[in-house]
Image (cartoon, rainbow, N blue to C red; front, side, top):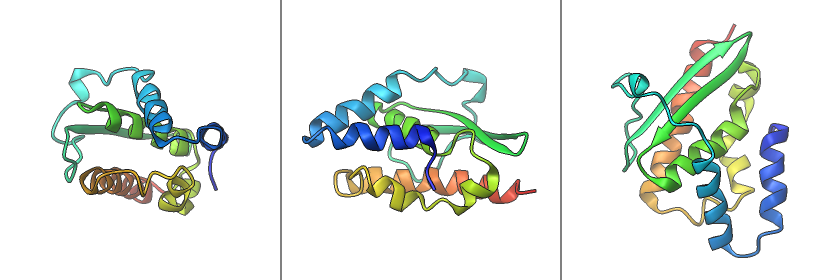
Length: 137
């Protein structure tokens, strides 16, 4: 159950035959995000299990998950942007019910990310899902 914003990415990816074009699109999505304030780059927001530095700052407002994030790696910043399209603004129960792996597989990410990047992506998804479960009403 993907958000309309994520469905737009899926549609855009369908028009891109070459994985390098898709890779560039992911990077551009990351570049378009606002940087995470330095005050939020603290141990509590750092995601362990990522090869690069990654910080996620999730919160629940009016029953919906919202989050910001940043990485020191361009592609990981792009992956954070993709996760924001998937999850940000979605009701917490929908976040919990979303099969992120299946949704991301629709983009072909699984077969084109290195093992380290895949592990980092899983760690980010788990961090967001754990937060959602802890904050389910």
